Length: 273
Image (tube, rainbow, N blue to C red; front, side):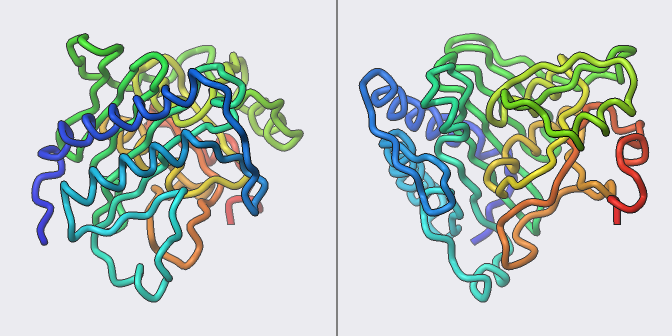
C-alpha cells in the first residue's frame, strides 16, 4: 500500500489523537492505580485506554501499515527490518507527569517512511494544545480546541539561551555540558512538549543524556524539523528510526537554530565518537 502524501493524514491523525485524549481524561478525572512495568516505568489505565483508541483508529485508516507502540509488543527485528513505513505511537507520553497530575503529558502519533518521521501529531489532553506537521507542509499549532491553527517556526539562537529540560535535576554531566553554552535559562517541562516549545520559538535547546525510546521522539521530531529545527545525536547526525534491533534512542540534542554546531559547542570529541 502506498501512503501517498503524508499531510493527507493529518486531519485523521488529529481526530484519533483527540479521541485518545478523551479516553485519557476519563481516567485522569478519577482515582487510578499505577503499575510498574518490567523496566520500572509506570503504566495506568489511561495508557491502555489511549492505546486501544489509537490502534483501532490506525487500523481503520491504514490497515496495511504496521504499528509500533509503547503499550504493545513490538514485532521482531527480523520482521521490522523489511518495513518501508510504519506508525510509531506513544499513547501517553509522560505517564509520570500524568501521575503527578501536572498536565504535562501528551499523545504522540508519527508516520515513519524510510526511517524518517514524515508526519506527526503531539496533543496535550489537559490543555488541548496540539502540534502537527508533515514533510513539506510545515509545522502548526492549535493552542486549544476551536482555535485557528497557526504555523510555527523555531527562532534564531537567543543571547540568553532557553534550555528545556525535565523536572528532575540535571546530572553532573548535563550541567557541565550546558555550562559550556554560556548564559542560559533552564525551564523544566514534561513529555514531548519540550520539542514543541522549541518548535514554536519559545526556547532554543533540549539536551537529553540517558535513555528514551523511539516513540518518545518521532512525532515531536517531525514537528520540530518542519518548524526549522532538528533532532541530532551527539555526533550531529539527524535521528532515524527502525534502523536496528533496539528501539532505544541514542542521546540527543533537539535544537531550534540549525546554523549552530551544537554538538561542537556541547560535546567533547571523545563523547562524540
